Image (cartoon, rainbow, N blue to C red; front, top):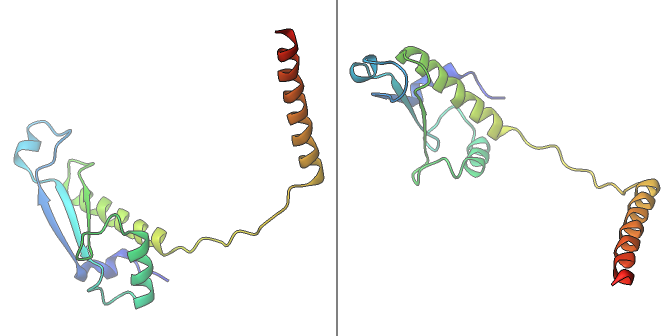
Length: 134
């Protein structure tokens, strides 16, 4: 089970910058964009198996040295953007640790097979009728 996002705070660093988007003159003055930086391999909260699973699932989102970067600039408030990026971070970890349910192989029913073959027969007859007209 994954601990709450607040448990990761000691391992997370935040960096702020000026955001683009809504805010008018506020955009030019206030650093409301928040970037979350978390080093997966240095995490002491997760087990090695959890780290490996996250490493596999988030391979495209991690830097070469295992750093996860997430940004939020949705809101005009820096505090709100920090909350948003923390929520995204936690959701991303939850999603990457979720193991998919194994698929059970099934056979199509006899009725489904019969219906498919009838459809193919009708389609073939249509094409055969077109050939005879030429």
